[in-house]
Amino acid sequence: MPLNVAVQMDHVSTVSIAGDTSFALSLEAQRRGHGLFHYTPDRLSMLGGKVFARIEAMTVRDEKDRHYSLGEAVRTDLSEMDVILLRQDPPFDMNYITTTHMLERIHPKTLVVNDPAWVRNSPEKIFVTEFPDLMPETLITRDAAEVAAFRRAHGDIIIKPLYGNGGAGIFHLKDDDRNLASLLEMFGQMFREPYIVQRYLKDVRKGDKRIILIEGEPVGAINRVPAEHDSRSNMHVGGRAEKTDLTEREREICARIGPSLRERGFILVGIDVIGDLMTEINVTSPTGVREVKRFGGADIAALFWDAVEARKA
Image 1 (cartoon, rainbow, N blue to C red):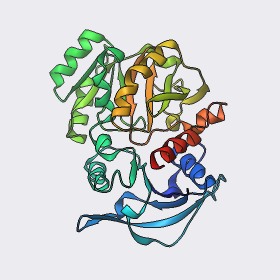
Image 2: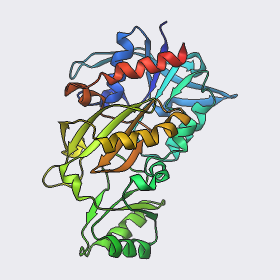
Image 3: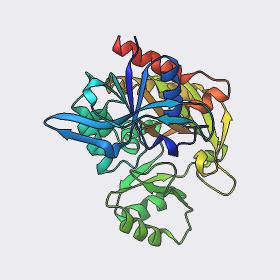
Image 4: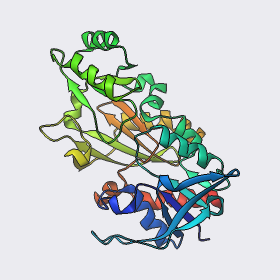
């Protein structure tokens, strides 16, 4: 049965369709005959306990520079939608958190994917700490003395914002780098939250693997290799995608975290693995779907809608 699907996302005009997962999910929804609508988070409103947005009927095309058409914006009670895809990119700030509170009012009668309450309660760089034996040594703090002691204990470190995304603000500091104090001063001025500090994993030069799970089960992966001049593997900062398969260790990691993902009602999740260690569990707007298919892997967008339709049956 056709579903009415609203996508809460950064404006569709800004997406790079070659690698955008929200666009891939939209294409598949349209292919299946679902009604497709678009709105940006700033259009959310709540009045009298009801959640509204000015939504636009959306048509998508897999054609660069003419990939979408939008209809007239119509103020709509979002409880009239069957499904809402919560797909805007982080940063995971108070604005993002507020949208999860609002969408929680209509879920699960209107199925919000991923579950907004659990998205709010599972920040990507904190959720992963529930599995300390699967991840590198990690410190979360604003205390400069703690950071300095951590570097003395572990040598090279990575420092990044706790609620950042897309590789922004990630620094690799060697054990003799004299910029630590200055960097912490800058972070202190830019962020009110703690920072995350991890032992640097040399295996990142071989790649940072993105593994995608549907309903807690692994369905595909790509390896993202950082550029020679960068320590970050994110593709929009120069990382290179490569075809890859899952190792036994990676299947073990997925098996360990799968029950927690299912308990939280997460349909689409992406985890990051470097070497044999998991560094993040991405539940907000995980990417990699188009790259997996491009390298001959599963059609994850189709698997996603199979899962959503099963929940709505």
